[in-house]
Amino acid sequence: MAISRKTGKPYYTDEEKEAALQNNNALEYALSHGYNLVRHGNTYQMKEHDSMVFKPDGSWFWNSQGKSGHAIDFLMEYEGYSYTEAILELAGAQELPAPKRQEIEQSMKDLQKPKLFILPEKAANYRRMFAYLVRQRGIDHNLVSQLEKEKKLYQGVTYAHFDIAGYDNQGKAWYTVKDRFTDKFQDVPRQKMTLYTHNLDGAHIIPCIPAHVIHDLVRSNQTLAYQNVIMVGYTPQKQPYYASMRAMTGKYKVDVTGSRKDYGFCINENADSNTVCVFESPIEAMSYWSMCREFHSPRLNCPMISLGGVSTSYALKQFVQDHPKIQNIITGLNIDTVQNGHTIAAGQLATDRIRREFGSKYRISTHKPNLNDWNDVLVNYRKDLAAITQQLQPARSASVIHHPQRGGLSL
Image 1 (cartoon, helix red, strand yellow):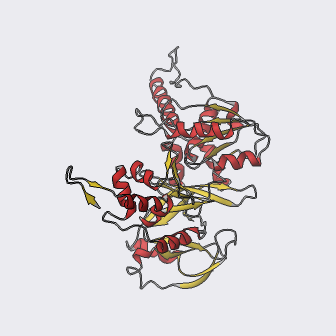
Image 2 (cartoon, helix red, strand yellow):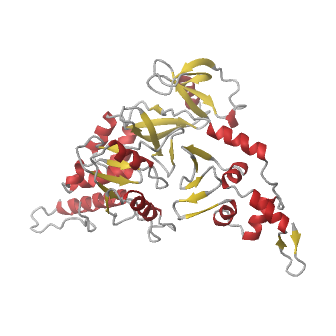
Image 3 (tube, one colour):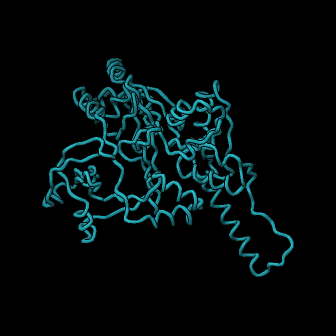
């Protein structure tokens, strides 16, 4: 790296620029710099930021911001480098060495290994889940009950120091210690067991720890148990294929490891309808259904699917492929405005993408929430309704009753 005598700033030589262009592969850069990627088909997504997608040809695209390019552009757009700094970084002229081909190839091999999709252990009861979804989120109780019966919703348990390894032939959960905590739990005995992912599928043999031992560790305060809402997507053959996991306290939410977004969470998937409604998350799909019930909307009986984020349209593509009667697509994605605390209009960008991808074959319409998302609309509606009900209690003879603000909704 050379320093200009005139400006005191670094600059690159022709040789360094040539070296940078040879290393201008965004996927290789991401792998060699510790980004946590998840493979989906022929692309790779950031686990914590799935709107950032990398392709094997070295290009990337950032769905939520409509940006794309190669490694140089990635450094500039995502990491905040100047063009000169990006060139020097990829040329290996800065503090970090240039990517090593052998390490990158091994990382790609590891990334391409299929990850088992194992649903989290079920809680002893679902009381907290019902309280969270119905009381806090305002979702219709009958809907929650029905989805729980269909095994699309349940209260799941995860643990701070352990990963689920699978289930034995009695349906009992077994665990492995997370790599970084191996030393801490080295004295906990393991048993070599034949485990399955679900329904006695995906058999694998692994040294592991039974769930009752983990429960004892929780009771003795040696590890922590976390209660989550698990929202599951199924194939037409009723095989679980995708699951979204959301904490009931805080903002933690993530796809269960091994999930694939082709078959997302869905309500009314078998409805005899020519219209499908599309949402960003399961919570928003359930919220929209609840609003439709409140307003006796005919859309109540339409299929409602979650994309599992706004980075891809895989779930919608698969759904219309499996349901050839579909003619209309209604998008109800988030507003994501500055007023709602967002700097990127990810929902609008995804809506535009759906119009481009499906507009030539389907009628596309948009039903925007008047607040940030449909759960905000639902919670606000419930709050207004409760306030009016409370006002009426001491004066039941009042002749004029104002309906809670509907926010211009037309369901």
